[in-house]
Image (cartoon, rainbow, N blue to C red; front, side, top):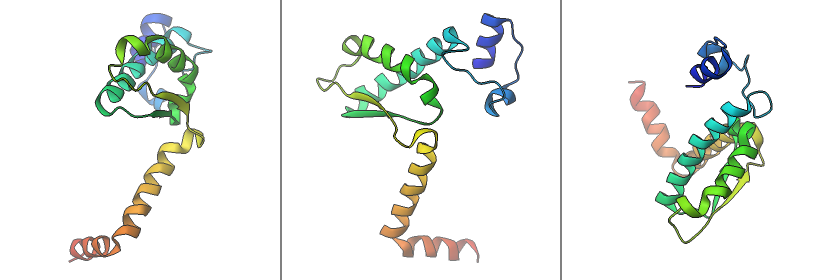
Length: 129
């Protein structure tokens, strides 16, 4: 947990709420050791996704953009030794930036609505009975 890392490495008592509300912002500039450790775990998650699904591209967006440079460096340094697929994907920044996850969720919901509006209407009617 990030709050524990801050306490251990920087002798700083921080509440989880301050991290969530971004009163305390963790970036590679102000907490480089913590950013590296977070990036390591994020990188391992990305490697697991690559090994499971073999995507051509992995897009980093949202709050992970704060760690993109560290993630990118670690990713390419460890790509050969940890990715078992013959296809080696690219790691890129989301062009929508911090809002990419929200925009993607809305786009997916809208697509589902357009594909099958009757299903959504029926669910709404059944719920209101």
